Image (cartoon, rainbow, N blue to C red; front, side, top):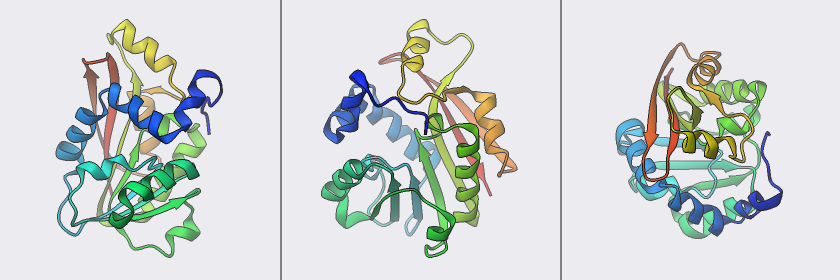
Length: 205
């Protein structure tokens, strides 16, 4: 996984600091928009969150969904269990095909802020796992920082300093998604509170 975890960035491995940093960066608005416009959860939905972090997306999801979260950080998963334990299934470790075999099929798979931490091979594996995990009518939703033409110099600088070492432009993200999904739609969003650019994809099975 291409991620810087030393120096100043090391503190982001601490769940409470990571969540606080996300709030400063405007995560509340971003997650609300993502839920309402892209995830569009319905009663009874099964949602698989790959790279779930502290599972803060649950704050924006209704209670009447079924949620599974997987993250490689034991600290993040423990924080998620302590805060949302009654609302989902939380697992520390990498998701694999053998694990998927024991899980139900999902209406939605989330990959929120994870692709820019993965190299191309790892990203393609994630898309393949997501495709396998989904019901026939299911969708993958992803969001990642993105380099783009005419983005502000501040946004470009902040994104270049992200812990994830595989930030791409929109076309590169889209090409990776198309390794498994035939129907891929994306939207570029420029944030104003702290200048930043995100690429959001909706990949339909």
